[in-house]
Length: 240
Image (cartoon, rainbow, N blue to C red):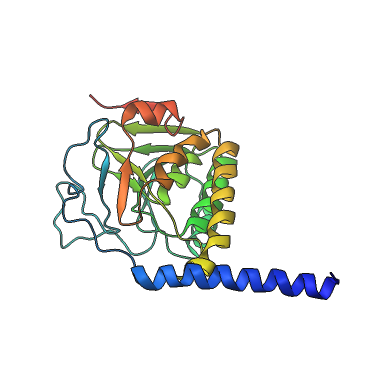
C-alpha cells in the first residue's frame, strides 16, 4: 500500500469514528444533561459514601443572603495583616491579573473561597502561589469546587476547616463547554494529563482525580476530611 493510500485509509477511519461519536452526541443532545432531580442539594450534610451533590457555580455561603452571589471573577482583598482573601469564580485571564496584584504586595497567607472556573488559570495561579511559598486556609463557611482545588493545591501549607467544602468533578478543557465528542476528546485527554502532572508536582496524590473523573459536570464530589489528608490536598484539618 502506498503512503498516500495509507494516509487516506487512516483519514477515512478517523472520519468514520468521528461520525460515530457525533451520532452518539446527537442521540443524547449537544448540551449538558439535565440535573438529577433526586441528587441531594449542595448544603445537605456529607458523610463517607454519600458525597455527590448538585453543583452550582454560584453557591451562597451559609449565613449569607442569596442576593449576595459569589463574584464573577477572583477578587483579592486584605483581611488583616499578612492574611488576604481570594474569593470568586475563576474567569479566563484571572491568573495573570491576580499574579500582577500579588507581585505588587505579596501576602504570606490566603483564605480561599471559590466555586471554580477556568482550569488553565487555576493551574497557572496555583504554581505562582507555590513559588511564593503562600500558605492557604479555608474557613468553615468556605467552598473550593471544580477547578478551585488546584489553587488550594498550590499552597505550601493547606489548612482546611473540616466544615469547609472541597469538591471535584469532570472538566471541560476546550473553549466551549458544548462540544461533540470527536472535537472534545483530545483536549480532555491532554487537559486531564496536565492536571494530574500538576497535582503530582504540588505533592498531591493524583489518584484524587478518580473521584473527579467519575462525577459529571453538573454534580460535585465533596472530599471528606480523611480524603483531604489521604490525598494530601490538605496538610492540616482544623476546626472542631
